[in-house]
Structure formats: structure tokens, C-alpha cells
Image (cartoon, rainbow, N blue to C red; front, side):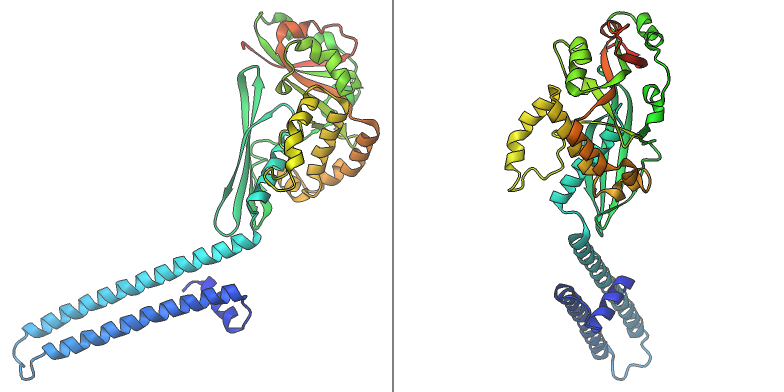
Length: 382
């Protein structure tokens, strides 16, 4: 009998189990008692049969004792097998029942799991601006063990340069550990960017790799601006020039500074809105999501501001997930409440952006007075 069932019996005797748990224990007790009664009846029948087969006056015939021993051994083997099977069935039943009880009480249900996975996907993209989400998934196991995963890919054109698979393990509905350290998931700070760190502007030097690239190649670059731009200014100054016929969201990843220290991207909040889309109260969100997403992709100032506010609110209340992915106190360092107030008051400003575009198109930006510096991340054939 396993320790868990012994604990259940002790709690049952003490009257400390709930009605449902007490009922399950009583069912198991009744089942095991019935099996033991059956075994006892079998043993009594066996000995009665043996008594009837023994000759009353046979003291020289040794054939009967040999048969008795064989029958006794067979009965013992059969009884042991039945007992072991009964114990195994009882054990499996108890484990399965207790696991379902624990999972039902403490694990994330399907709606909560959907919301958490969407929030997790959005969060990871905010902290990894040079990657984009390729897919996400969730898993579940015994005793309220669950998992969330996101596959990130770094692209240059149609070429995949790198992948990262970020996973978080949950226990009793709370994040427990992750593989973030193993795959080098980290957040960016302003010292990582020359324009924010106070380094002098030097855009011409950064264009040299593009000048050497042959025609038909695609480059992924980081362009930092001399002055922060609004979403509409970003579109008018750079997006329209680089993508006259296509403004695909995945080709442009603008960056903003939060709390004067930490750099985040602003992925569209409307792609992975962390609400359960099939709930009764989500009709308005489902109807307006396409419209809001289109406004975001048009670089509407208010839409980008609202998207960033939505992204920051995802972080609120997820201190444990941030701690699991990064470290304790990150939510305090972000100063999310202050950042939201600032964006509501003044809108969102971008100090730089990742662009993926044709190398010759990017060369046309050389000498643009709005550029502080450019860094070529990669060049590929297509």
C-alpha cells in the first residue's frame, strides 16, 4: 500500500477528507475487502477438496501427497497472482483518482491555459525583438504538471538564421522552472544600443557591408535614430521607402525604451491577445481584432500606443513567470505602471528598429540625417 493511500486512510479516519475524497476511499476499501473475501473462500474450498481426496486408511501410497503438494503450490501461485493483481489495480486506481483530483483543483483549465500560452508567447517576443514567434504549444501531465512552449525563429528574408525553443514547466498552476538560461533568453538594456548609450553618430561605417553585397541579396539590419520617432514618422521616414508595395509586420520590429533602462519591442497585441476567444464576453474583441490589427500595421500612432499598453499589462500580475524566465524583481525594474501612464499621456516613441529588406534598398538610406547608426546583422541570398 503506497504512502499516499496510507495518508488518505489516516485523513479518512480523522474525518478530515472532503465528501468526494471520502467516497473514493470507501470505494477502494470495499473493493479490496471483496477481493480478500474471495481469496479466503477459494482457500477454504481448496482445503475441503484436499480433505475429500485423501484416503482414510492409505498410509503407504505416496502418490497422493505429491498431488496434494502440487495442488497446494498451484493454489498458492494462483492466490499470490490474484492478490498482486488486486493490489496493482487498487494502486493504479488510487494514483489516477488522486491525480485527477489534484489536477482538477490546482491546474490551469483549458481557458486559463490558452490565455497563459498567449501571454507567454507575447512576452517572449517583447524581450526578443530580433526573433519572431513561429509556433506555441501547451502540455499536461499527472498531478497538475503542465508545460508551455514557444518556438522563436530569426529570419533574414526567407532564410532561417537561428531558432530558440523556450519552455516553462508549471506545477499546481504556477511556473516552476524553464530552459531560458540554456537557450540564452535575455532582455536588452539601453547600454546595448549606441544611440542610447551616448556614442557618437557614425552611420556611413555601418553601410560598408551592404555596399559589398551583390544584387538580389537580403539583409537584416538594426537602424538607430538620432531622435525617437512616432509610429507614423517611422513609416513615413523608413517603412515607405524600404517597402513601397509591402509593409509586412514581420519585416519591421521597432524598439522602445521602458523605465529609462530596459528595451522592449512592440509586437502587435492583436495577434496574440491574451483572452479566451470563445468566451461569451469576447464577441467584441473577435469582431474588432482584424480592424485593430490593420490599424497597427498601418502604423497608426494610437493603435501602436494601445498595443504597447496592452503588452505592458500582460506583464502585470506575472511576476512569477518573469522571475522564472529572467530574475526576481524584473517587474519592479520595468516600472510598468509609470510606463503605461507615460504612453497614455505622450504616445509611444521608437528609438530604433530592426529591418529586413533588399540590400540595395537599404543602401538608399545612406546619408539620411535621421540615422544615428546602422548595424548589419546578416546578409542572405533570398
